Image 1 (cartoon, rainbow, N blue to C red):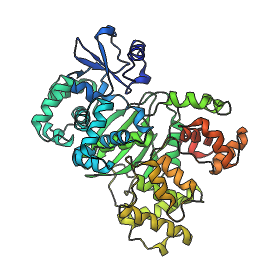
Image 2 (cartoon, rainbow, N blue to C red; image 1 turned 90 degrees about the vertical axis):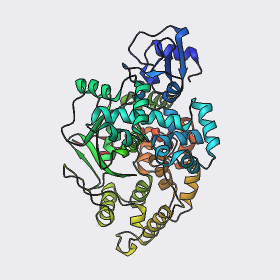
Image 3 (cartoon, rainbow, N blue to C red; image 1 turned 60 degrees about the vertical axis):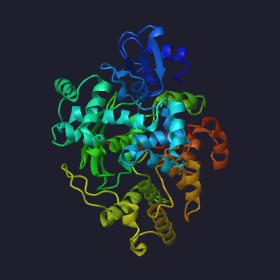
Image 4 (tube, helix red, strand yellow; image 1 turned 120 degrees about the vertical axis):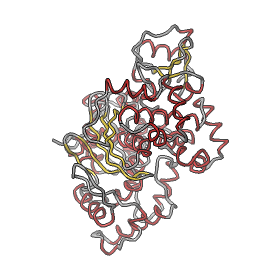
Length: 490
């Protein structure tokens, strides 16, 4: 979008928050870059130039606006709607892969050379992987500076910087303030969390956001010991590269309040990325709803409660295991099966609030389970053990960097995997916005009640007009049934 100057100017003049993250406005006279919804008086058109990313602005010598804080705007929804190498690279950079594994590690995960990834990112985003990762490190550093009392040296290494000097130089260059000045400014306006060691932050999103199905689904399917709904917040444990964590996510009218307790602050970038992915916070609900509303049978559902998101997962392997456990059983039974696995094979953790007890077991931990001890039909045991074996040995990878169609082909080749299981994993674990469940019982009931075709083949043909947002159509169709997944818990 940043190449369409006229459209960008209109968005800036109208201060349209829907375009935050789609592009950034750099002001040639002040050398400051802003989000489109910045509250200041818009500059003259001849003084505006537009960039596709904050990293490109920083690389061009612009610093972040102190009023609108463009570095904290929602991410571009484009990266979650595409499965090409650039989109997969952006999702991996958001997960902190470049900080942990470098550009060669990023390229190896994508199956390309480092030079080719660099060329593709420069062509589309105006910045290479190192510049994009640097911009993310700067934002992580700012969060740690403003929300914790960690010494600056600890902040520097936790954010991914290789030295304190590089940290100081980057913060001054990006924010036009020294790290100490950032902390002093924050102390005047940010209230410290009551619990020591907790990192409190706000996760932005594009309005509207309907929390009912999003948090209702997560709470209704929560695995005891790993997840819970408490005091208006969804809480769960997280398995992270350097340790583990506990997160509490609370919906608010203009943001999601996020409280993180980490065993290692270096996991902050990964934890934030996982939380945003879980809640689908980088989606563009207006674009999705506008297209789905064109179907007269879907329009009433959308008008009644717009802004539904797709509830995802923090770990693709975890969700695949849970999807198998949930085959042809009730939500309560699936929770019971998962809770038994957690108690037997999960890693125990300490929760200051007492409700969470374990991390969900990794594929490696489940690889040694005795299938005879599973209270499942024999065919389901075979399905589960085959899946766990493929995940443990690396022959099957389910994550933000997965190629959607390749992952589908690998899943359907496993015993016991039918279209429903494959598509629900594609929707919630891989993040494919076009995943569709025409054989789902709830979808078939909704189709029959709304007057849509009720057979899978006919419904799939009708749903062609909903592409590429069929996963969001599923969320609206599920609301026809009065199921706990559609309601926030009391």
